[in-house]
Amino acid sequence: MLNTLHQKKGWQLLLGFVAGVFFGFFLQKGGVTQYDIILGQLLLQDFTVVKIMLAAVVTGMLGVHLMRALGWVRLQPKPGSWATAVWGGLFFGIGFAVLGYCPGTVAGAVGNGFLDAAVGGLVGITVGAGLFAAVYGRIQKPVLSRGDFGEKTLPQLFKTKDWTVVLPAAVVLTAVLWLLERAGL
Image (cartoon, rainbow, N blue to C red; front, side):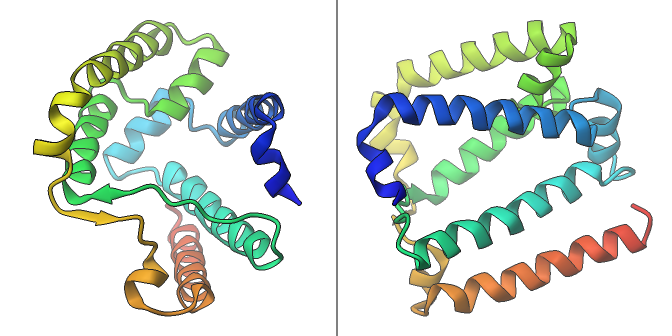
C-alpha cells in the first residue's frame, strides 16, 4: 500500500511537510518548544520532554512494525557505527546544552516566534550541516566508519522476531512513562 509512495517524490515531500507541521504543532502544544521546559529537562527537574519523546517512540515503534506486519511498508535501516553515534551525540548534546533546543524544538520555537531559536538555532543548524557536508568525504571512512555495525535492527542483532523485541520494549517504555507520571515528574 504505502510502498507505491516510494516512487512518488512529490507526494513524499508533501506528506513530509504535513507531518512536520503536525509534529511542530504537537511539540508546541506539549510545551517542549519553551526554553524553560527544556532547561528543566536538562536540570532533571521537569520530565515533560522525556515523556513526550517516550510516548512518540512507543507509538511510532508499534505503528511502524504493525504497518510492516500488514505489508504496507518495509524497513530500510541505514548503516551505522559506534563512531557516528558518539560524534553525533556529542555535537547534538553540545548544541542542545548551549542553545537549549534540539532540531525539532528549534523549528517549533521558530514557529512560536522565539528569536533565540530563529537566530541561534537556525543559524547553528545551517552552519553545522554545511560544515558536516563539507568534511564528510574526508571523515567518513577514517573516523565515522569505526565500529561499523551495518544496517542491523535490534531484532536482527538478537537473532529473533521483531515482535519479540518490540512488545517488551513498548511495555518497558510505557511503564517508565507511568512511573514518571506517578512520581509527578
